[in-house]
Image 1 (cartoon, rainbow, N blue to C red):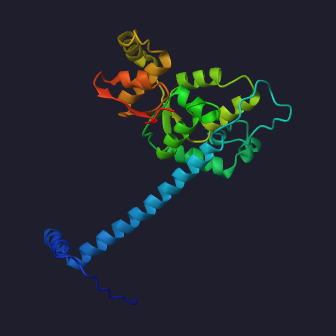
Image 2 (cartoon, rainbow, N blue to C red):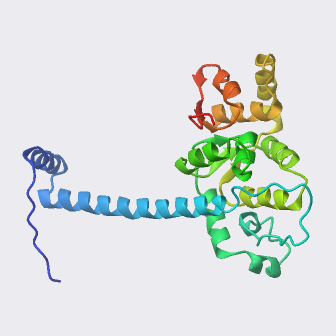
Image 3 (cartoon, rainbow, N blue to C red):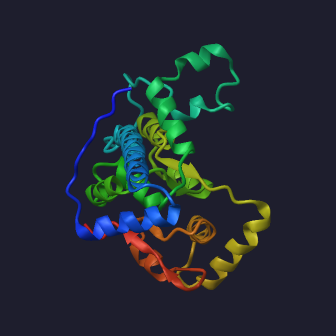
Length: 256
C-alpha cells in the first residue's frame, strides 16, 4: 500500500504536548497524531449526522406552525399523511397496509426523536403559540424554538390542555396532531407512585395557583435534570424552583 508523507508546522506548545503524550503511552509521536486525527474525523462525521437529524426534526415541526384559526370545519379539508407516531409498534398493529402509508421522512423523524434525550421542556401556551400565527407570542416562540435542540420534553397533562384549547375545527386539531407526531416532542411518563411529588408542588405554590400541568413540568425538570423551558407563562415559571432551589431558564427571552 502506498504511504503518503505529510509535513505540518506545529506550535511549540502542541509539539510538546504530543511528545509528552507519546512518552506516557510509550508509542511514537506519529501514532498519537494519527489517533488524534482519526478521533477528530470521526467526531466530524457524528456532528454532521446529528446536525442533519436536527434539521429534519425542525423541518417536520415547522410544517405545522402558523395554521390559520378557523371557527368551523373546512369543507375541503384533506387530512395530512401519517407521520411519526404511525411508525411506532403500537400504531402499526393494523397491519402491512397501514405500515406502508408511513412516509420515510416521518419514520426518520420518529426514530431520531426516540434516540435522543430531551434538553428542554415545552408547555401548553408555547405549543399553542407555535401553531397559531395570530397568537401574540407566535413569532417569539418560533424564534426560540429554532434555537433549541429537539426533541422537547412535555407531559400528557400538557397535551390534554393543548387539545382542549387548540380550537374546535378539524384543521386545528389535525395541525396539533401533526406537530405532536413530528418528532419534536417526547412525553415524560409519570407513574402513580410519583403523584405525591405533584401534590407537594401544587401545595407549595397554591397561591399562584400552580395547575396540574405546570406541576408535571416542574417535576419532570427535577427528575430529568432540565432547567430550560419554552413557555408563555413567564411569571409562573420565573417563580417556580426546581427542587426548591434552582431557577428555570425561561424562553422566549423577550416578551412580545
